[in-house]
Image (cartoon, rainbow, N blue to C red; front, side):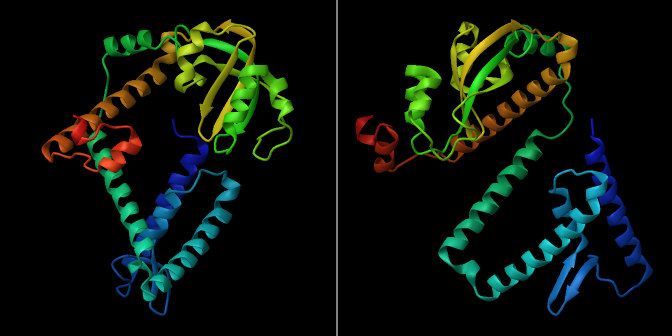
Length: 291
């Protein structure tokens, strides 16, 4: 379902592209790619602007015009600075060339994955029900927790100290460490509601064994959560209510299999192998001599 914010943005884009295209039809002096800003040796096309708009977050109707203007001004500035960099041959320097190559590699890989996983996918009713049964912590066996937790940034240099202190003495151990930059909140824990499918990573295996009073340590993007279970209740999600999430899970699973198979075929066909014994040693992999 498209939110009212996203829907408004799509209408905005369609209207903007149509308006500029019609303006181009009215006069023969317009270039093939419609120009929205120009100057000496400079032009910004509707297609460039459209791409920037599509990458912007959805906003309320009131914020669309200011956002649209801010994106246009920022895009002009960025393109002017990029032109200066090119005229100074900065794209030929080693570091910049490597970053450009990395960006190109990433874009091409994503484009291939989108092509590979595109198309219509409609799982069977049997597949849907099997996925539902195979993921009890998300659906039929879902649990609801009330958790007191402290949230840390995962890139803290002394994150291990916090984990050790929490596992040994709970929140009291964290208090003993004193004030340290990097806490999302004060060392005093906050109370939140979590579900069993929120507890991801290695901690997932421990979810069936959690009870009131249990410690739970899990990660989300950029964060480590140190928690204590205060309340616990069964909160199953019926199949029909879970159907959209089950369908999305099957689609993600199917896409992952397609990509994995494609990568394996490429590796096998092109006989890709890690040949650096130094790197193998660092990564704990056996060297050629050890095989």
